[in-house]
Image (cartoon, rainbow, N blue to C red):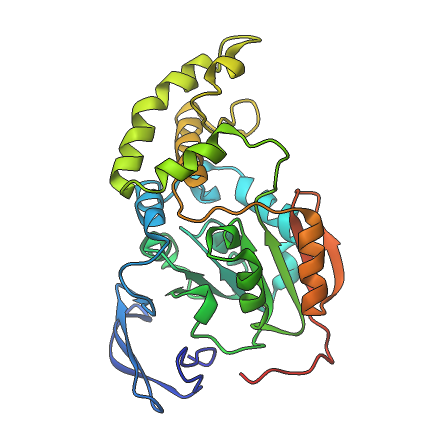
Length: 325
């Protein structure tokens, strides 16, 4: 609770009421602002600061269908750990004793990586009901807190986190630039901010165009359609030399020969990432030059583009004028 504030009036004095605790977890109850009297429920272990309908509605079906697919503990690999290090340019061991915020945690694949160190305190925020999958996956980690909230008005104090990161999420908001500015407020002076967003291509790919149709479907219909056509390009892509070209009109993600996964896991990852590429309402794509410009606007220092295209890491200056928390 020491990291929370009212998202409406910014009052830092919030009260936990009617709490029901199971194994040191608050499973239900409510959080009330002592200043404006706003109230938010805690349901199934997760404080809920959003309405039940939002622009991230498609992610709920996606992450709850494949709630464990990308967890390293499930795949028996270090894929998520390696991805975290590659994008954030940070080793999990460097976060020992730190307070970390993930913006757009999904089902918790990266939270699991950094929470292995019990001295790291982690808060994961997501706008969608993917928080339910994250909580189920990570409830045994006492150093993780899952929150359902809007990244543009998070119920968390400004300048409170040693590191804030977001991997593959900000481009699914109404404005990637505005979302970056919003989450940057929560970085401590001297703290780190790291993000990765989709890269802009000179020539649109087929799934870029499919997105404009798929996003208008109800999540259940979009999933049904992808599940229906997925076996066709999945089989075609195995044909030597011409397979990828034959399958291109029906775009899918395919990590065979790239990621060390079992055949069944390969299908799960393919299906999950195919959904992620085409069903969110907002999908923006950017250039490294844009990221550098945004870092300049924030007046952050030690700016470094990562090896992963369109990833960037930066530090908030220690002496930067403080904003009210």
